[in-house]
Image (tube, rainbow, N blue to C red; front, side, top):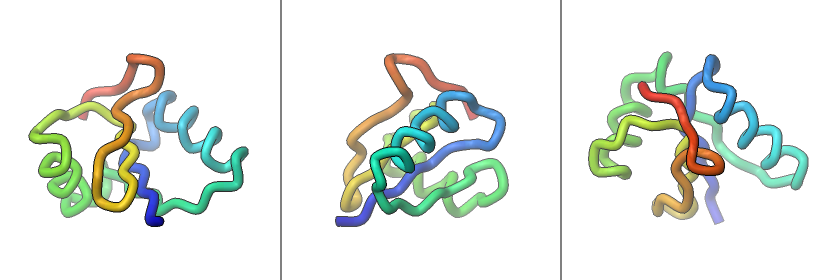
Length: 74
C-alpha cells in the first residue's frame, strides 16, 4: 500500500493529519504542493480540481480531503 499526503507547510490541518499518520506509525510520502508544482498538478488531477489541502491518497485513490471537514485553500 502506498500512502501519500498532499499539503502545505502553513496549513495547520496538514500538520494535524501528518501528526496523526506519524503517531499511528504509518509510512507515507509527503508532498509540499507550495514548493512542488508537479505535486500540485497531480493533486488537482486526483481531486478533479479541488484546491483544498490536506489530501490523503492511498494507492492512487483519494481517501480524505481536509480534516474534520476543514482544510486550507491552495
